[in-house]
Picture 1 (cartoon, rainbow, N blue to C red):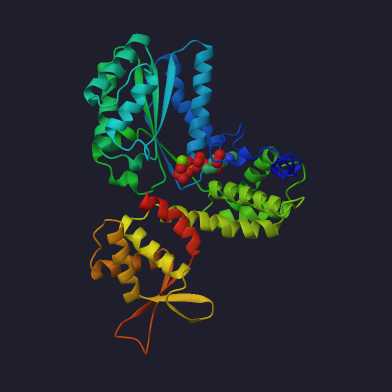
Picture 2: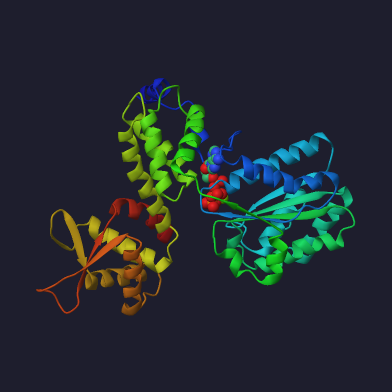
Length: 398
Ligand SMILES: Nc1ncnc2c1ncn2[C@@H]1O[C@H](COP(=O)(O)OP(=O)(O)OP(=O)(O)O)[C@@H](O)[C@H]1O
Ligand SMILES: [Mg+2]
């Protein structure tokens, strides 16, 4: 019985030959439509090879326009080239969504340069001196990539102290590459940080449907078996992603899911029909991810609503849909908060949360009309209650 399952998995046909090539971490050898940006970034960093400190770079552009992948690509080529010529160039890549304070950034740099040391709990000043010591000792030229830099708390201090290191260093240097998809972020920087970080600015424009099609075709050749994706399917993915403000990440995610759908059906080829189904799945993935980052009170409210919907409580008579009155939902929310050991918010705040969730499209709110008390509102969940419970219960209960 178990062997049957394993055998099935072994002999199962798949449209993929290398599914990982569609994962967000894969760095392709070819980045079509970014030749200019690759050249410009390479030219800006190249002085590092002859011992001059390159200008700091600030890269911005909408989500999925290739900022991260291009930067990683150029930095990797540069450090490989330098290593061949025995030039001490080193790079540290930092995602500021994860390392979101100055102290975390310093710990990350310190532990990459000095892996044998443990910097946890050490003062920033101590780590800073250790980093400088290491740079001096090996005449190191260090590139620090601060990706999603808008998520870094205390950004000005971090940028200031990293940049100031250059004045204290007789040998070696530190150069910064800041990356952000927040188009208004740079306008909010204070003048000193702005002039330090924005020595060289680069903008990544969004891809259009034609560029996305080419990017997808290239990637499909690596990820899928020959002829396993219909050209119409790729064109459709490109068209949808172009509408999503030219987001290449969304395009690749959609293609990946379309392949999964085709596999589930045991189909030979990925077709437009699979793309349509994949689009629903990806949109749901995006919503579920968004739900997992909502403030806790809104999560509790949503979980209460999902449970009531799942149990079929509330008012029927809207086809198969369940609607819940705002009063019933508030009571359920307050009870659940107490079960979880949290203080429920007042009804005023509750109304704010309801409008937030409606704005995100997670719920729909309608006026109850006659037969109901005063300004009773009816609330409907727009997503599968099961999925919401699966996402939120472990978070809130765990
Ligand atoms: N020109 C390109 N050729 C091939 N693949 C690309 C290209 N541009 C982007 N991609 C792919 O699209 C995805 C998104 O790119 P990337 O992560 O670089 O976007 P980003 O601009 O950093 O977005 P965000 O601001 O959301 O972080 C990645 O999987 C990347 O490999
Ligand atoms: Mg990125």
